Amino acid sequence: MPTHDDYTLFHGDCFDFLPTIPEKSVDLVLTDPPYNIGVKTKKNGKAIVNEWDRIGDGYVDWCIDWLNECSRVLKPQGVLYFWHNDMVQVAELMEAIRHRTPLVFRSFCIWDKGDSYRARSWKDRQADSKTRPRCWFNVCEYCLHYFNTNPNEAVWYRTGMDRVLSNPENFRTLKQWYDGELKRLGITPKDIARKYTEVTGKKPYMLRHYFQNSQFEIPTREVYDSVYVPLGFSFPGQAEALRQEYEALRQEYEAQRQEYEAQRNLHRVDFKHCNIWHMSALSSAKRFHTCQKPVPLLRRLIRVSCPDGGVVLDPFMGSGSTGVACVQTGRKFIGVELDIHFFDVAKNRLKKAVDNFQYNLFEETGENNG
Image (tube, rainbow, N blue to C red; front, top):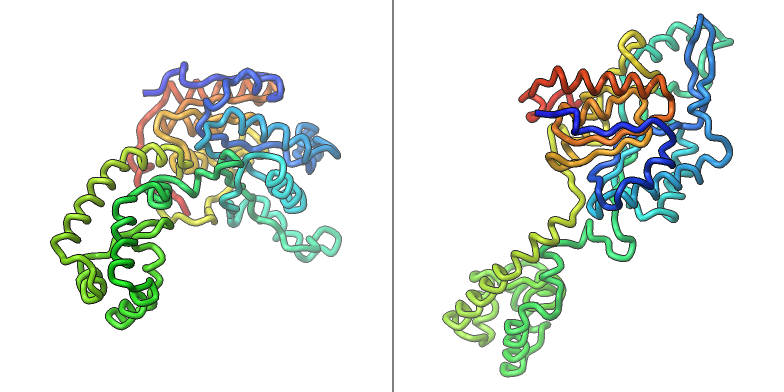
């Protein structure tokens, strides 16, 4: 059961609070930063531009600063998502992130809002030449997915048995035996390749790995008996002894594999696992914040990319939807918000989420994932 100790909220600028978070202590950053486009809302019937969404000409540099700070507090295997909807700035940001942060791009995701309230409002203007859009009306937002990693060692794609099998020092006895057999028989790998193709009808691509330093493999018993034995390699009894040695070595390296697997960035595959998410936007009557994201969508991202009981950080907390999703999924939450009104809204929403917590089993099996 969640408690009020499972979340920490900070009212103020994230650049003041992020340095106080210990490095490598956060599992997931899930945030919705200012888009620098001047989000408009209505007050007393008049449209106003929210200054909290305006950063100015230094927007990309500002983003790189908070992204690097998030990378510092993320664990080496941590994951980061951030929302946006302006493609020009997104393109600039992606290039800057690639060159100026340790974050590695993984997925470009789209939240399809469908026939949302904003989409319906534009349909009413189609016949009006003064207000109808001059481009394709946008009914989606974008979510950029990154892995945290050491730029000098991309552990997110080279882990586990891949490293074990590509280490020239491993399985040395088997490799030396193989080289000795080639010399004893006076044959070359090309002779084995011709025999392999003759017997299997396949191109000898696997010979790049059999008894080699690159992604080491040992032939199946069927391949060994039909290809290697006819060429004069050791009789099957000796081959079986070597196979047993290989299996003993493989088990010995299993502990290494598990250690490396722990370094991988978490990503659980769930129901309808693609990069387009179909979910209706919240109506204005149900929103606490003009940029509010649906809690079910945030719950999904947390379940996919944060370990059970892990820590989620949102440096632009807004009305606290990410925090509510953390409470509902059993994760700890750290939230930062500059605007005192939204900070108070978030604080009240998280208190209510804890007080009214109920575990919903259906979320584990795939809830409105689109």
